[in-house]
Length: 501
Image 1 (tube, rainbow, N blue to C red):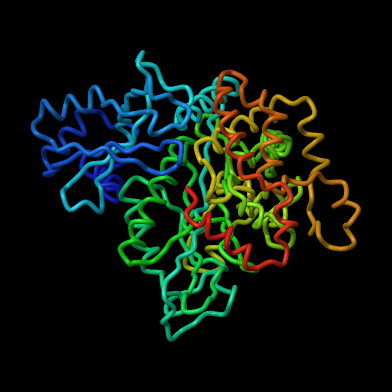
Image 2: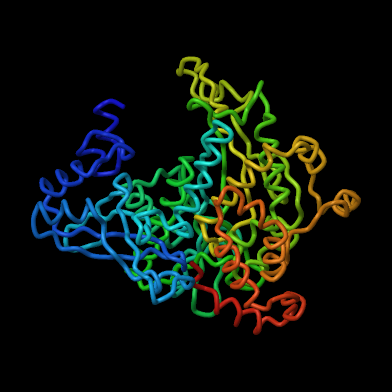
């Protein structure tokens, strides 16, 4: 990168240090802190509940700062993870320097750094969310020689008193602009702050869902990211959620990532886009079309899709969203540009050239190949997801697909280039496997395929046991049938899980 490119980067540390975040060192952080009046450093980390935790330090001198950044600090693991006993609960939190960012909310100038968990022997905590993901990606790289990149689509609702002169059409909010959307300014501010904190943002927009209920207005928005390495993709989602919540709290508005917040309105997903690179080149496209590598990985995701819901759809209201005719998947299939499928291959830039010159005749011909932007999208997860485990699970599934002897055949058999719910495609629909319809079934799917996730020590046995136990405790088997048509009961359940993750 050139100096001008560094100066255009929204991350204040990148601008100042003139280097990408992946190259940040302890000395870099010390220099930034000393020369920019930083008074506090905050360790941030994600524990079992999926929310961002904080440990604050007042900086009392250079040697004190060096000690903090060199040795980390100890925390009570039993208060962060239910499976760690109080009798031997101490853990270390160790800062990952590349994640450092200037806290955009603190009145005291502060630098925040995401951390990893280590045990008493100074080894990574095998069950820590971020370490499970790292193990999955390291194994994938070693096995395939490929790098797994991903990004998420962060959908959310904002609820606030409805006092606008310009009301949008119910459930027609897709890409609406002010004044017909009330919370566009908050979304824009969130995007600026997320980028300053290191997030790589693609774009933001209002989403389909908007409606009024009594005196309250509800608006749905989305912030979508650019593909980065898997670990960074999850880190930026976690930080982004925190930023959006902080801004909404400032405005006394409620923000929710819940998969469903009312009856008969659009739900919120957490779609995950993926690609794989070799030597820095996206290899999802081969000879101008979706290649065998991508198809095999899609087959692996199809094979393990039921188990993946245990990480990506973790509350009973997840399965109020995963119903037919709602642009949310219910059957195990994939297709191009098809929003009713489990894995969608979105419109890419394969064969579409010359559009800029067509619209702007004064522009010269641009012969660059933009097909490297191609991804494939897992449309099942929602905001209740344990995003570290979900991403790790997708990597495991992708590797499993590459290693399956019949991966290409399975991909061919499960391809759906039509609306599978159209009456004349009933035979195709009847041939497809269905996703789980409750947390109980999701847990059963994970139990059945747990061996694949536990291979190579990626998911510890205790982690799988804990996930299954949590899902089973909901006792939601048959819930959708029991509450069908009972709007009051549905809303009780919706409100119970409005603050997921």
